[in-house]
Image (cartoon, rainbow, N blue to C red; front, side, top):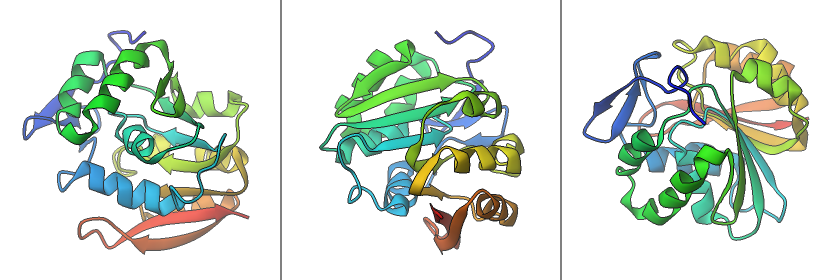
Length: 218
C-alpha cells in the first residue's frame, strides 16, 4: 500500500493535469497526454505490431498509469507489463488524473481497482508495479523486457532516473533485439543508452518537440 511519505505532492493544471511539486514537471503533456503516449511509447517501440502472447514491456515511471492504459487499449493478446515507481499516486489522485481521458474510463477503473495490490490486470495486460527507487529495484529484478518505456520526469529535473548506471541496468534487463523509446533527446541520455548496448536513433518528437529517442538492443 502507498504510505504517506511515498505519495506525491501534486499541483493541478486545467483541472486534471497533475504536476509534481517535487520535480516541477507535469505527468503528461499539456498538448495531449494520450496522443504523446501513442506517439512516443507505442509507435516508438513499433507497437502494436510486435505484440505477441507473453511479450514483456517494462517502464521507468508509472505516474498516472497512462502508458499502461494506452497499451491496454491496443493489446489483444496476453502480455506482461512491469513498472518501477518511487512515488505512486493514491486512488484519489489517479481518479482525478484519469478524468482527462474519458475514452479510457473502463480501463482506468480496472487500473484503480487493482493498483493497490501491485499485481493486477488491465484488459489483457498482466501488471506488476514495483514501488521503490529504480536504482535499487531494477538491479534486483530478474526479468527481461522486450520493450522499455523510459518515462521519468525531465532529465534536467529528475537526473537520478537517467544516469548511466541505471541505463546500464536497462540494457542488462532487455532481451536481444529489444527496444526502448523515450521523449528525451538529451545527449547524455542517448550516450548512456548506446553504452548500455543499444543502437540509438533520434526520431521526430511530439507536438512541436524536435526530437525524441528510440533504439534497439544490439
